[in-house]
Image (cartoon, helix red, strand yellow):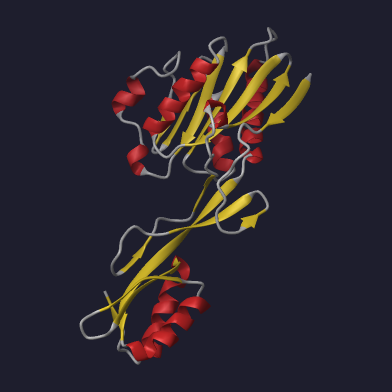
Length: 269
C-alpha cells in the first residue's frame, strides 16, 4: 500500500566551491569592508535552483500511501514574505488537492511572522503554529498531523531558510492520525534528502595596511590560511592596503601571524 517515486524538478543547480556528495561548501563573505568583521553562524540550506521555467523552481518527490498521493515540495526561502508567494503558487498549481500543509524555517529574525500574519488566513483552517522564525500549518488536517511532521523533517535535516510543502490528494481511505504523521513526515524527509544542499561557512574579512617589505610574507600567510586577498591599493606613503577573507574560525590565528610577520607594524582598519 506504500509506493514512492522521486523526481527532481530542476536539472540545473548552481555550483559553489567544493562538492561533498550531495552537499556543497560555500564561503559566505561579509558585506562589511573595513576592520575585522564576520558573517553569521554556519548554515545549511537547500542549493539554489537555476530557474529555467516555472516548473524548474522547486524540488519534488511523490509518495503513494493507501491510494492517497503525497507530493513533497521543497524550495529555498529566506523570508516569510517569499515563502507566502511560493505557497500561494503551489496551491494554484494544485487546485484539486485536499490539503497543502507546510513547514518553514528561516535563519533571519526579520522573517518571524507578525501577529497579523498569524491571524490572516493563508490556510483553510488558520491553524498555523509560530515559534520564532519557524512556521507550520496543518491546512485542514487534524492538529499536529501534517505541519509539525514537516517542520520536524526540516529541523532533523538541520536546514534553514527552507520552505517544505506536502500536497495531499486523498485516495478515499482514512489513514488515522498516526498514518498521517508518518505520511507527511516521510514525504517531507524524502524531498529534503533528495535535494542538494549548501553549507555556508562563515568568514571574516581583515582590512590592513602594511609596509611593502612585508607584502610577500602577508600574502604567503593568506595562502597558508586559505585566505583570499582583494582590494589591493597603495596610500600616499606607499604602503599597501589589502583585504584578506578567510574562514571565521581561523581569523584570530591569521591576525596573530600577521602581527608577528610584520613585527607589529601592521595596522588593522
